[in-house]
Image (tube, rainbow, N blue to C red; front, side):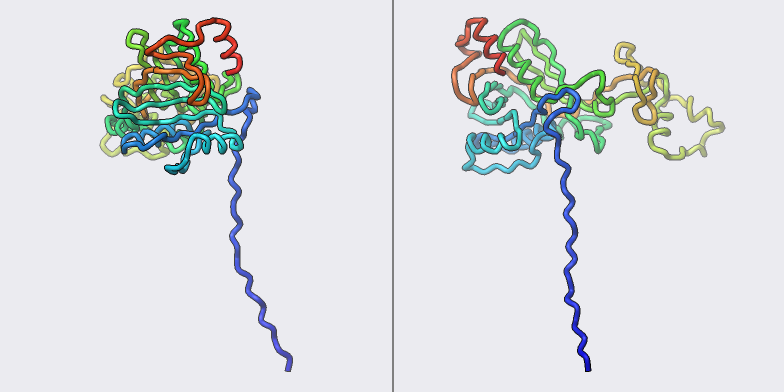
Length: 321
C-alpha cells in the first residue's frame, strides 16, 4: 500500500512594510534639508527632560524623536552618527547650579550659540491654560515656519543668530508652497532693551470672515445639527451668541487665499488668520558664540569683547556658514 507523505507546513511570515524614507534634498529649492538632534549634556531634572521632548516634537519631522542617550555618550559619538544620517544641527540642553542653558550648533565644524534660559513653560502647561486646546493629528507632519522680529539692529552677533535659526528649518518657496503644509510657526522676538529673546511656538488656522461659528462647525464635522428646539432653520444661523459678531475679525489679520483650503476656506475669499500657542515657551539670552562645535575661539561674549573685531573676518566667517 502506498504511503502518503505529509506535506511540510510552511510558517506564514508577514511581510514587513518598508518605511518611507525622508527626502534629503528639497525638490523645490534644491537645497539640502536641515535635520537636527536634540539631546542633553549632563543630567537633567524632570522638567528639563520634558522640555527636551517638547523641543524634539517642535523640530519634527526632520529630527530624531526617539533618540536614545546613554551616560557614557560624548559629543563625538553624536557627531559620528550625524554624518551618515545627514544631521546638520545639534540642540543641546544642560543644567548648572545657576541656570539651564541651550546650545545650538552647526555640524560638523560649528559655530555654536549658547543661550541662557531665563524662563520656560512646557507644552503641557500651555495646553492646560487654554479653554479650547487645539492639536490636529497632522499638525507635526510638516516643518514650522520661522519668523524673526527685532534682529535687524545691525549688530554682528544678532546677524549670526538670524542666519543660524533660519538654517535650522527648511526653506520655502512662496510661489509653490502648499497652504495645507503651513500649520505651525516659530516666532522669535528680540528685545534690544533687555537683550532677551522670546521663543514662541504657535499653530496656524484659518477662519472664513463673515461666517458664523455654528456654520463652520456644521460644515467641518459632517453632523446633522439638533433643530428640535428651533422654530425655523434661520434661527440656527442667527441665534445670539454664536454669530461672527462674538469673534471680531481684525482687518489687518485677514488674507485672500489663492486656492481652496479644507471645506470651509475657499479661494478668492477673505479668511482670518488665527494663532494658538502650543508650546514650549522660552525666554533666552545669548551668552556666547564659539567658532567650532562647542570649542574654538569666542566670536561673541555677553561678558566680554568679541575676538573677531574686523568686518572682513565676520564676512569671511558668514561665507563659510
